[in-house]
Image (cartoon, one colour):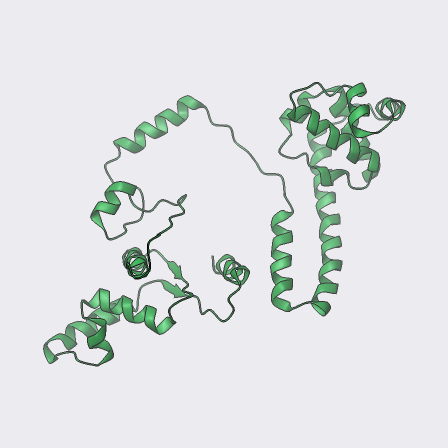
Length: 283
């Protein structure tokens, strides 16, 4: 069976049984029907009708898609044979992704010669993220979620990463994997110092972290961390004004900090895209 025939089979089965759409909606996407203008138009109309909570009958499909009623009718008659819908959809998905990748590779070949390399890398990664491979969605039972919630709150242990700040840990239960935390304040209020202290506390417990600063050099970041971890003022470290009494402790603590799994992004380009790409690669 050709790709074109497969697309028409899937569209025909969807029209005859809209339950298939709800069952496989995570795998059904418009780009699957890129080889057939009629199928693409019908599917676009079909999914829109479903989202409007209406029945996607032939009359409504014809009106919204612009495809003639007789064309849709003929398509159903010619391609209404029974198929294993899931297998057909998996095959079409795989073939469509191959086609999309080939098209992108040709486009990248042109970009490599005509565009800035960093912009090309960013474009490639953006395209790869937009190739929406169907995801395995899971619908969780509400009763199971209640049990999970109750088990979590009965657990007296901290579930997130230790920030190094007791009161902050009490509020957040530690840094959670799903969190995006923004530190916001006026200038010179200690945002960077707080972030560095949190990063150091996490690293001290063996959890890696990556730092990037658009206002401080790598040397300044390292100096602040060493000052905080050794409890010696940064000014004294810069001026080498460390007493003989403190030097042994300082050296020992510095050697300990060396083991922290902290990585510093060396910013050579102010592009946010470059920063995001670097984080993805590093992760």
